[in-house]
Length: 133
Image 1 (cartoon, rainbow, N blue to C red):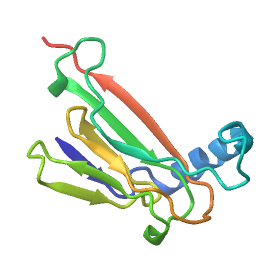
Image 2: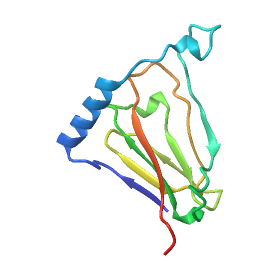
Image 3: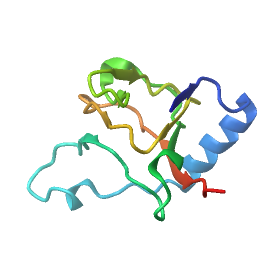
């Protein structure tokens, strides 16, 4: 199961959430990650599946991301890719602000590298599961 919802929150709630995140954001010392470089940190998310949560069946475990940044240009990279359970299919999903993406944790997924300087990228991630009845 893959769900993609634009304008997930009402605009006033999205602004309040984004402002709260920015207010509490603490920059990390980039040198902590690579002491021999003054280059910006570029995180890569390689293709992977998340696995089950607390032993629940994988088809009842979910991951979601809510993108909270102000603006994103797809030319910067950072595109989320999800594969259907048929490994040959892949779905590129733009990390547009106020977009919620949710999937069952057995779907392989990854993000393309961010390839240039860009504004702060923010998202909230959550995992949960549904217990069998």
